[in-house]
Image (cartoon, rainbow, N blue to C red; front, side, top):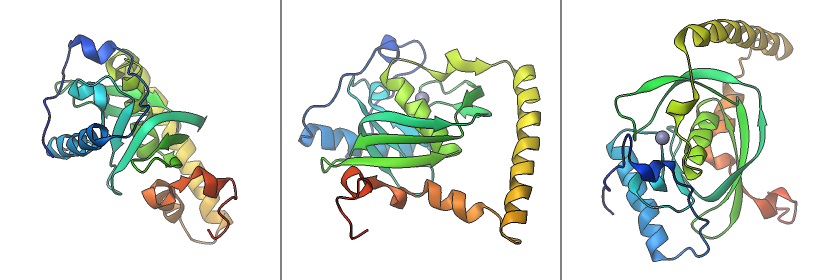
Length: 203
Ligand SMILES: [Zn+2]
């Protein structure tokens, strides 16, 4: 395990499309471990292989609920929209507002070669979208919403979220939805596709 050199700013590799991974060999496993080390060292919540100079479809994410290693990930479903501040380890001096889905469902292969699915809400949804963009040579600085517009969007969004929160409190006595969103973000919620398809019924 090692910390790899981050590609930053106008490095052309950040604009290139990454290739599918066809075999999970030791090189891929080492790359994943090194990417986690590099991400934690820089206190990031996600990292994509092109950011360490490797054009393969591999990302690592940890939004504080444990690491997720995603090989050949794809977003299969997305819902809603949230504007929030975003940054990137490859653009250390930049940050800005970006609009992302509120919920996403992504499918990917794990290091054991099983196809898995993860549902992300809020920060995890944002991290998945941001990292998957990197695999297609897309970077957040191109998606920034101007501050004034973003602040108006956030005002409307906060009203909507508060309304939804109230509705949930009314519907479920005095419980908040915190438990729900917590559970939604836990990598423990990650399931293999076979389990999802009901082939593995002991779940
Ligand atoms: Zn990034």
